[in-house]
Amino acid sequence: MKNKFKLVSIFGIASILLLLAFKPLNEKKVIVIDAGHGGKDFGATVGEVMEKKIVENLANKIKALNKDKNIEIVLLREEDNFLDLKERVDRINALKPNLVISLHVNNTKNEAVNGVGAFVSKENKFQEESYKHAEGLIEKVSNDNLAKRGVKEAPLFILANSNCPAVNLQVGFLSNTKEREYLTSEKGQNEIASNVISYLKKL
Image (cartoon, rainbow, N blue to C red; front, side, top):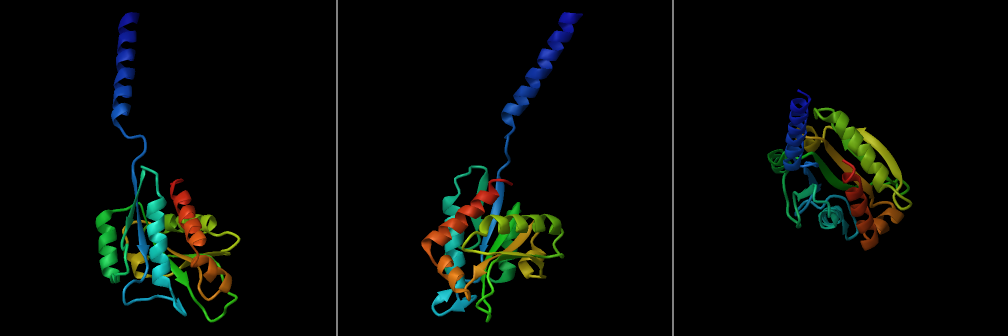
């Protein structure tokens, strides 16, 4: 009888190990990066510096720097082309991602205002999760060159209509001289992209 129980136990353990062998330990996470504006829509501008180009560069760098096989980065635009908001949302929802990050930079008349901030929407059913991602991204991206701001609520179209956690990440102010210099530098853009990847690896 004891031998019979041992045989059953061994068979049971072997079955579990076999199932685990064919089950991926880490499910691949799909992250959509939405580079805001593009084409005829320049976004915020200061002189010849345009928001659309900065966020396009950041999006491409985020994808290029990602070496994690368990993270798939999908860009809504890789070039300077215009996509309307509905088209962006349709693409996002067709992909069914784990998270969408809409990249933007800020601008204001008060040159002293600075910092990395984010928006989420209460109309998104993943609002709580979106808020946590927003806080985590701000914490990771802010540094000595980019001050830290907070998370605010806004009924932005992409945030409200994406069927997944969605964050509008504002990575600094073009109107602030220090942050503009950092945002337009190769070093600054590489650091921001690397910090976003670093956050995504912890998901």
